Length: 142
Length: 140
Image (cartoon, rainbow over all chains, first blue to last red; front, side, top):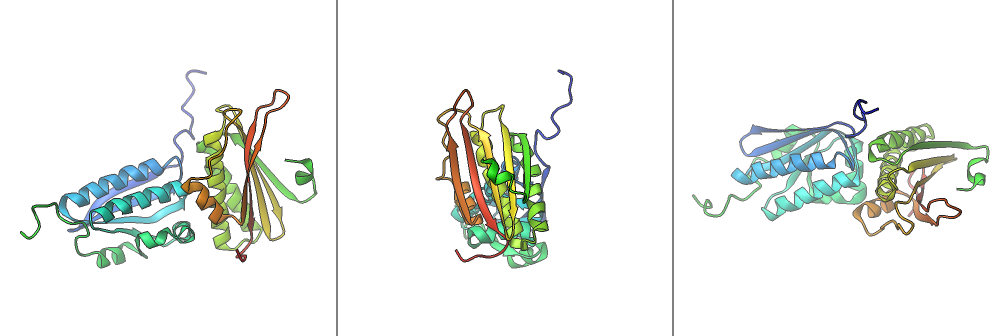
């Protein structure tokens, strides 16, 4: 059947990411859905965008995973990669992780040590008020 | 998989899908449901769901495109054994166990084992993973 509808499962479950600037100095990436081998690339794209935005003006990055209902090792690897990139820039990746679906994988793999983990977005923004990412060279000490 | 493992009169569930990553969410949902109804604690349910996802993702990567992914859950008192298997992409396909995903799988499951079976009599070679997960914390 050449005119058949596309395979409804072909792209995996939905994973939405939304980038915002809730306050100066913070880039917030809200993530909703299940993060697995199929959807990890969308998380990667969202985090890349967030890190770039943060790098441009020295903001901190908060990934709000409150809406994440599954987190596989492929997703953990993406989070760890983003944390490493931020660390190279002198910053930390802040995660909002309240549900077991996110906290358990972080805990059981020991990956939780790589992030600053908060219970809600307000707490993450409150404890990350200062730029986490060093400004580009040449702008230091203006 | 021997018949003795399936036909022992205890609770056994088998799920067969196309060997595609898009159907793994369905399989891990079954794993989660079985663990919940077997009174696994919440951490163990989460661990089993993630372990099954990991095992299936590893196998789908090694599978022939036309293969079935066969996932059998043997629900026993206080533990679940999972036996997942695909037809290998090549006769000499070997699952790599030096990956981050495999390390995570070893952490999540109480015991995990790779199974390779050579093709005989025109049947394709298969690769599989067997994992055991107990209902609650066990001393490692």
